[in-house]
Image (spheres, one colour):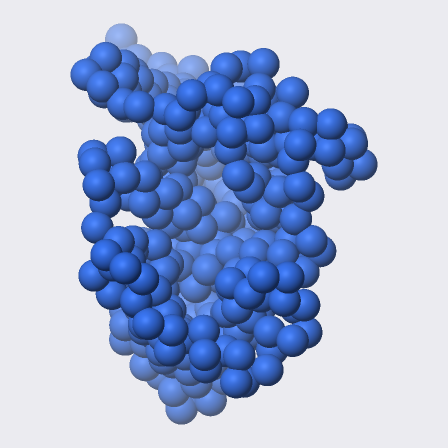
Length: 395
């Protein structure tokens, strides 16, 4: 981050302190571990485990690994949630050291602070509610360490999913009624960005962890994993669309010109994040256009050996790279603070009819491109596998 720091200082940007970087990045790791894991388990893993072709041994192995992963995700959420609260206390105090913000009395004062003038609810009350939900969610997930509780894995995940979503949605609720449409849309797109991003990254991390069970799975596990990857590819595609739409709105709100991406501290941090996300999208495109068609071809040909190799050896290697890029994105996030418009002295963004029309056109274009991507991947999967004999016709 040396280049970022030097360029940022020249632009009047203040680099966040180390504790702020660690607590914010850790908080999003915690959210990814709960939101992403619960969504991916319910939409991709559980349906595949219930398929008639899945053996009871393979299903039991993946359920045990899922339960253990979720239990540790609860621990991470509890720890990172606490330090995020301490960071909020430190930021609320003028020049308060991070260590002083850990004092229980200071935390209590922060949570019990009265509502600001014109606010419909005290900000501290919202944080109280958020942390109560966080504690309950973490406790439910940590309980999965107990073998007897693991028998109720599906029920716990079903309860933890809305609770984990509530953690970020409550914190993003404005304490003061928004004055105009932009003020309403800002938190909506912000939360859409957070939720879709955590589902995407958290889901990738879960599937990489589950792929580590390949040594305990049967020879027919390739069929199970082909179904899991197929289901998650659809989830990831929706997340990519949501991240793109919300990211475009947030970028327009805080960046007034393309040149601000390399002349302001905010812009440089955002540019680094964009490059990392493009790396994620590129890896996803490789999966969609190369791996998924080959998995479908091997499945159609009933080639168990190739299917097992593609789904549990080749595919996880690519996803590991995506996880590394995702972690890098979370590290960069704390540096995206303030606004490039403010640093550059440009006017604030104000929406109007033309902005919404352009946004609607972009959303439509994105939807068409994602649909075309899915259809192209499906068309590639229907092509004969390399080296396959051409079908013959009886004369």
